[in-house]
Image 1 (tube, rainbow, N blue to C red):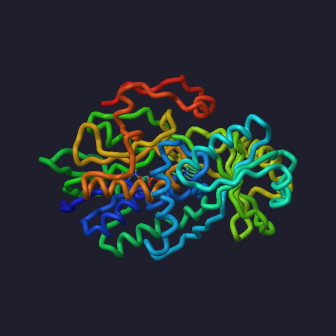
Image 2 (cartoon, rainbow, N blue to C red):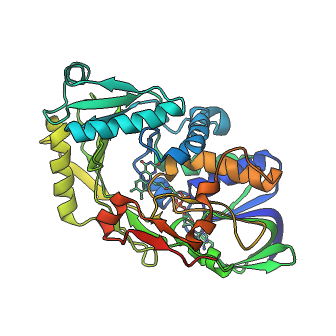
Amino acid sequence: MTTRMRVAVVGGGLIGTWTAHFLARRGLDVILIEKGMVGAQSSGVNFGNLRLQGRHPGQYPLSLRSQALWEDIEALIGDRCEFERTGHLYVAMNDAEREKLEQHARVAESHGLVIERIGCDELRRRWPWLGEGPQAATYSARDATSNPRLVSVAVARAAQRRGAEIVEHTRVTEVCRNGTGFTLETDTGRAVDCDAVVNSAGAWALNIAEAFGETAPMFAAGPPQFVTEPIPYRVTPSVQAVDGSVIFRQILRGNVIFAGYPRTAADPVLNRAPVPPIKTLNGMRNLMKIAPFLKSAQVIRVWSGIEGYLPDMLPVIGESGTTPGLYHAFGFCGHGFQVGPGVAAVLVDLIVDGRTDTPIDLFSINRFKNSVQVSDKLAREFDLPAAAGGRAG
Ligand SMILES: Cc1cc2nc3c(=O)[nH]c(=O)nc-3n(C[C@H](O)[C@H](O)[C@H](O)COP(=O)(O)OP(=O)(O)OC[C@H]3O[C@@H](n4cnc5c(N)ncnc54)[C@H](O)[C@@H]3O)c2cc1C
């Protein structure tokens, strides 16, 4: 059976579902094909942080566009998905880290964010449960959280109500040129002819890009996540150590979710994202420096996810460098939940209007034709060389 559609979206994570939803709202015929279940990969297992502080300077316009969409989520999809403006507290343990906070704050402020600088005494007054470690912090009230287990599924449902076709348990096995359009083959025998393809296949996206003669040095990994038993509610903001060692938040049901770094390599072929037991102990140790009241909280579940990382910690977003009508959005390096709706809005600008006002040149797949600078943090975590790439296209 061959279906004719205007756009086919490959991958039913956050990027794919929001893209299908926005395309359907613009009145386009769209089919989304997901090899497993919608939102079952990174998009459904992530930490749920919608952090604005500490982003790459070039990502702010996209990030702020996305946050505005998150803030409107109920009107957009008819479901709040536990979106809360919790605020985000970035803590520093010493003077060097305080300077790092200051640098992040200046960048965020230059994009219009309101950042509070908080000294040691005020920190203890406002958040009396903080341990002795944090010496200073910055706070952004606009940063938020949402429940990742709910979002992609709710967005897919909203897209369906707008007329999008959502197909699960169907793997796209081949995408090939068909005149000026494309034909997609699947493992269920269904084929789709379309004018445009969105490659939102997450850590698996290179299979499609490489079929069109372009690639990127992407690898799969995930930050280990932990959740404690429910304890009395007291932590409102997300709290993150600016050295990147730990981040935590408490949900209204009382459980404390935390993520410990460094990240762990994942396997997209075997579909595995292991968390070695030592990472739970290290994560707890780092958490204790900030929130010692959690000392006797029991960790009841541990998990991670399969996320695509690129060495410069920036995603690939935009039209293919080799094939008009093919749009890539992958490699979100642990930041894709926050930027997801904004990325989808950009893709829809490109597909429907042929242009976008949101700056995305930084995210072109063509950047890997030359070697890119590897992020210091990623280089330390995965023992990477200082530069990578130089082979795409
Ligand atoms: C543990 C963890 C914690 C994180 N925490 C945060 C956070 O707090 N804040 C934040 O902003 N980001 C966070 N992230 C990152 C964020 O979750 C991801 O960047 C985002 O979900 C990526 O969405 P996606 O749609 O690109 O990918 P995915 O969710 O991986 O979706 C891609 C989909 O494509 C499907 N697919 C692949 N190949 C095919 C094919 N051939 N045919 C059909 N379907 C296919 C897959 O099955 C998958 O469902 C975290 C990630 C992880 C792993």
